[in-house]
Amino acid sequence: MRRFIVSLTTLVVLASGAARADTVTDFTLDNGMQVVVVEDHRAPVVVHMVWYRAGAADEQPGVSGVAHFLEHLLFKATDNMEAGEFSRVVAANGGADNAFTSYDFTAYFQRVAADRLGLMMQMEADRMRGLKLSPDDIATERDVILEERAQRTDNDPNALFREQLRAALYMNHRYGIPVIGWRHEAENLTRADALAYYSRFYAPNDAVLIVAGDVTPDKVRTLAQEYYGAVAPTRDLPVRARPAEPTQRAARRLVMADARVSQPYMTRMYLAPERDSGAQAQAAALVYLANLLGGSGATSVLGNALEFDEKIAVYTGASYSATSLDDTDFSFVVVPAQGVTLRQVETALDRVLEQFLQDGIDPAHFERIKMQIRAAEIYKLDGVSALADTYGRALTSGLTVQDVQAWPDVLQAVTPADVMDAAVQMLDTRRSVTGWLTPENGEVMQ
Image (cartoon, rainbow, N blue to C red; front, side, top):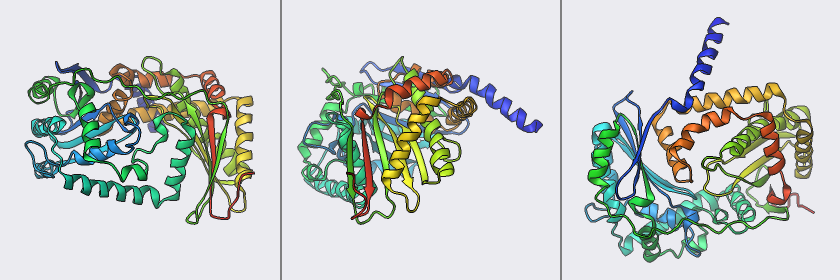
């Protein structure tokens, strides 16, 4: 027992300084490139990441999937490298590299020995402006992304269902269009489409360089000025603006039937506010709300009510995507038990939510969630890759370094009253989509 108390005390002490545990320095090069250095000298390795403030939601109409398509193409030839040479050099130096695209960003990263950092910067700066694309490159990678869509989306009824839900939730914003693109548009992506996106967004003044690991700010500054500082910025960089959502006045509902579905389930997505720079309190309250309502089947409000008390569900969950440039989503999912209909679990979900709004939050449950959130923020500090990812996602979604560092304290300042206020504002079915995924000839909404 004494050992447990000592461990718990240590956790609390660490948590009080969680926002300051990582040593972070940020500065901006003359060409407008933001640089963030996260020091961690426990091992002689470094994570080098370049994040572009451009993702699928920044695409022009008619070319959905081009951001992800270009991500693939960036591993082709440049003025100074052959196609595929980038990854071969990283591997030959004992490292690993990859890239990923989301709605708000496209990111490229390498994890290598710290003394290889300059080489990574040299190659990444080269492909920021020097990409050379042949007709064969376009045809090959277009086939690759179409196969990726087939494997991850078209052949998965759950993925298709989520795609339809997002398209219904976002009536005007491009968050309703899949990152990988609609198939009929991805099939027709051209070299001109890729280069138009590349020339518009791939520039030092539209990028964030994050270096995390066994480095010093002075060393990173010297190397960044040498390699990235020589890249000319884009003049008159376009303002980052997307079509805004109109006022949503009616709840939407959909049913998707697919013969491949073995386990039906229902889900509901609400349009929800994102974290905003300097005003993160509402988002922090929604993090608590998701954990309270559906964070764990054994302890959450929905889990206790539907899985254990009534035994009408085999799984319940709630999630909230806080880090987003524009309005994001808050979701529930309920998987019915054998013999229970989707209509029954949806009715039960509504009943439990209504009861929660009436009864409020159990203080003991709230304190458990607060400790869990505090611990999670501490554990994030343990890995340089996770830290680099945290800063990259935030800085390409409208937040600042100061917002990231303040976030743990903002979370700990949340009160039960804050959570209930956020719940009342967000749980408005007029801003929601409810969906049922069923086998063919399954249950249908009336």
